[in-house]
Image (cartoon, rainbow, N blue to C red; front, side, top):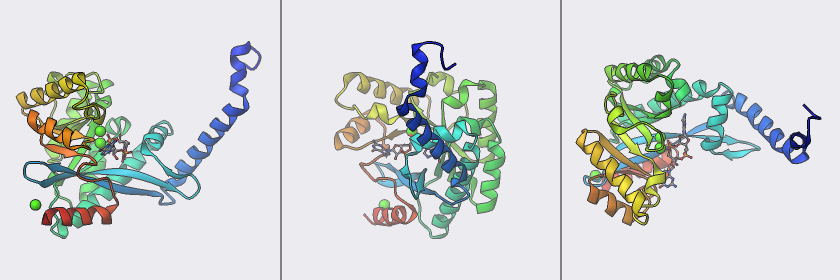
Length: 278
Ligand code: C2E
Ligand code: CA
Ligand code: CA
Ligand code: CA
């Protein structure tokens, strides 16, 4: 469709070619990244503000490429989904996270369950099998593993999703709804599903307590979760003002720069040991 009018000429502009060329290079690099061992996990704590205990740790994937540098997961995860690589990447993450949690368990470091992000594609693929494999290979007790699932997993097939969550619970593995509030599902609808925790998306926390509307929204989510007996974690908590607002509303578990930034296994171990002493 090279010649059908002036709207198509952009397809062939030099800028466009550079962008698609870069994309192509990145895609090819991504295809071989697992084999070349270029992924690394970073870990970030979830802290109970009342007891000052680490009640969970989230594993966040990092991609370090020799020439492309550090590519953000926000950029390469959607690409991995498109290319059909996400199940392999998520499975690697799941196994590595379980092994790391097993190391902390053996060392007597208490930090709650390790949580892993599960993409919608993986959720609808062979999730229960990968989870069982990861638990077996690491001999990690199931209650020390948690899966973070976004509302996107439920859009395609609600019945399938509810069955999957029940299977995960039957294994003894925990689950949470990630980025809560950014999807379309209502809390009462979600409450029929077998999950343990919901994570309020950092985009809502960001403008608390300055923006009255966001404050109202966060207050409502916390109140409804309490009424339904679901635990709540606030993501992206950075400031003391946010901590004051959230604890006033009855939400006490925070994940964010206020307590710590994601770091590699060694940095996270240092944080856990230091935090336990204080
Ligand atoms: P997410 O699951 O919502 O993870 C939280 C993101 O917020 C992380 O970004 C984390 O570094 C960042 N964050 C934590 N505390 C703060 C804070 O106080 N302020 C701000 N501004 N940000 C904070 P990250 O690591 O870049 O990950 C981005 C997204 O990529 C994740 O969002 C998740 O959706 C996805 N992702 C990361 N790792 C994996 C993975 O292993 N598998 C899959 N499928 N997705 C992943
Ligand atoms: Ca997450
Ligand atoms: Ca999130
Ligand atoms: Ca302590």
